[in-house]
Amino acid sequence: MTFTTRLDHAQRLVVFHGKEKLSQEELSQALKLFRDPDFPSDYDILNLFDEDIRVEINHDSIVSHAIERQRTLIEREPGRQLRSAFVAVPPALKALLDLWPLFFPETDGSLLIRFFDTLEEALAWLEREPFDVAALEDFPVQPL
Image 1: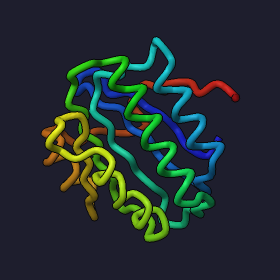
Image 2: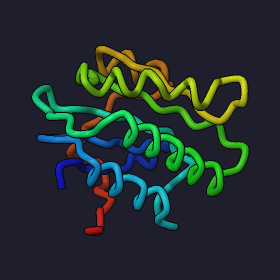
Image 3: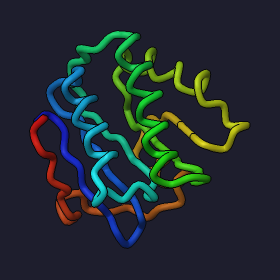
Image 4: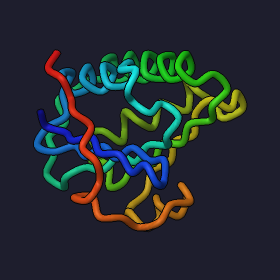
């Protein structure tokens, strides 16, 4: 697995950390997590990326993932306004993620996505405090 999922229950925050590569397999794993009944779908999401992560996905994959991700989260938490902060997004991925608001405009209140250069900026937008990632609870990811 090239990403980790940790939970900050006190702040109601899921922290995804992408490492090494981001491929269709990782997108599928993330969707599997969102469907897991034990996954806290009412928590906001913070997405972190290693500086040297390889992006091995295409436009169609990210669009399909975005649609399925949002559909799943809306089904699990109807009416919830989920906030997703992405920190230091690799350029190849940012070009794809920039499309998400086109599919989920803020006017419908279902998705707020923002990109940040620093963790501090993302935490401020999410209205969360700094944390020690290593101290957070690990949410197990099951193989596909």
